[in-house]
Length: 207
Image (cartoon, rainbow, N blue to C red; front, side, top):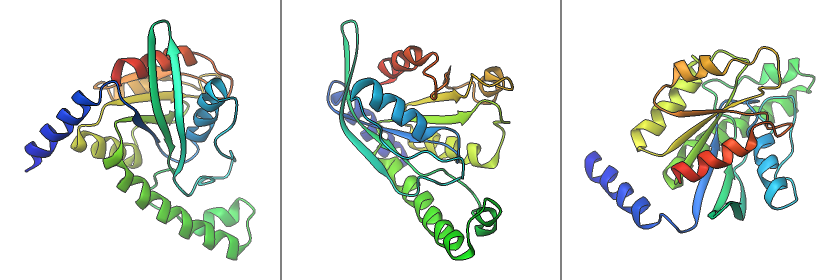
């Protein structure tokens, strides 16, 4: 059954090669998914996609921006961009209280964030390509990252790993490359647009 599903997805991608795709942004909280989504939307649509915050789980619902068309020379790619809530194995409302929220607000955010994680995993089955956005200043060997990559490998979905925040001194792209050698890793700064062209080129390669 699993082999049949993999073959079915392969055929779907084969015949949908030049059609409209769904590209999902996944990763742990505060890796820069929404910042990257905003960068893509600003570059090609002239508008932002979502709100960014230093407090984890600002994005708690699936956000979709439709009909994005990117070009590079003779290459063109058309897709819907799906920004997902940050994946976490544990969401504790007390962490939001420490960030300055009142208890009721913190509990509400924790509940919404938990639902967002469940929805994000469910949406994996709808994705044609997944971009995993990781903070390049942090250790990539975490339970959350391994869970995300494990889910992607089980579904046989094309993946690009973005090592974000290369503008920061502690950034270490090689550490992410060593952690996930099976995937292409592109170092960028979603905030400032550093190396964003390489990211777009990587999308053309896997889509």
